[in-house]
View 1 (cartoon, rainbow, N blue to C red):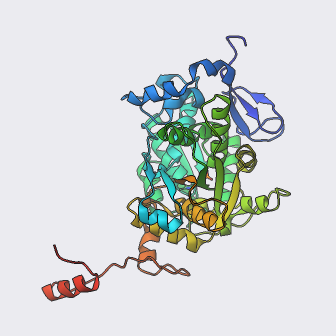
View 2 (view 1 turned 90 degrees about the vertical axis):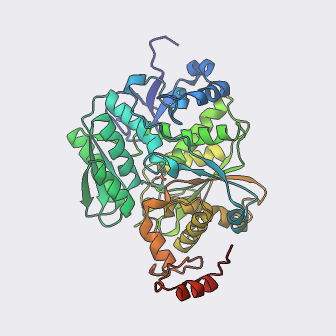
Length: 438
Ligand code: F0G
């Protein structure tokens, strides 16, 4: 290979056409297919090793103190360090599921990778550091995304750091309060669009093309390069031993796509002992990928999405074909869970002391369902992804525990109580709550 050849190119996953990394395209200019950032793994191979990534764990300064840039060679090898927009994202905990939660799920060896522990409270920061770095490299002045709330929170924060103007399109009335508060506070221009997420994303694509604004949804392949590091990091945390299963919620299917690419590249580079199977969990009312999977992908479905888990209320996932490729690479499967299963799983994850937002709990509900169905064995090693922080959506928590969540039961409710300011009231409270003294 010539030394002046680029380390990475953009390649269409359908027709193979390549584009320069700096071309302002988000889909293939020839056929409209999705683009991968394709790294020259043969040239990178001599640089990459488990030891390199382990050695970087001692770094205290940017960029290598980040749980994304630790793996720079597999994320964005050509990015100049001074251009990197980072908040030291990643480095999230991989918890062993507390006993009560594991027993409820029926899993003996369940771990939880908590991406809600990122700087803005969701996994989106891992992708945003990659995408915003590229935006800065190409000299973008403004960036736009459609969002159910987490992408926008993340983009607004990273745009502020980079000195780039953030513009955000939300589906009107369908965003959790914690998330909306973030992008308002970080200074984005926040716009409610009278339509659902899918309509917002369509509009973003057209607006970016027409007005030359930098697009930061996950069809931007630099985002997915950052999101790959969730898998790299969780396997490194397991001392490079892959689990049997990685289970994650699926909405727009960016993460699903990123996970497959990460595992595929890790295998090619000898970083993996075996390939874990991916299980994608969708909410029943927002499950077009599940429908297609069930029919052997005879057709690509899209639906009018419904679910209480607003983060994954998506009817026409943009990364559909990349996610399908992930299933092929990992012997992956797709399952769906009801909203009741989601809120109950969330209540259990929360009460275990770990906590997550509703969409995240879809992964735990999915593990429970797949174990009950005999697809996952109870003794298999499972890593379930928690994608967002508990405080993103306080409304669902309060309603569930007050038993005011319309159309739902609250079997694990923890009611707020009110008493008169007397010792007698405290005494009867202690008796009824079974709180013992001492
Ligand atoms: N979990 C959370 C907390 C999310 O915010 C999202 C997506 C997903 C799961 C689904 O991930 O799209 O990669 O399949 N949120 C996007 C947003 C759509 O706008 O914040 P996916």
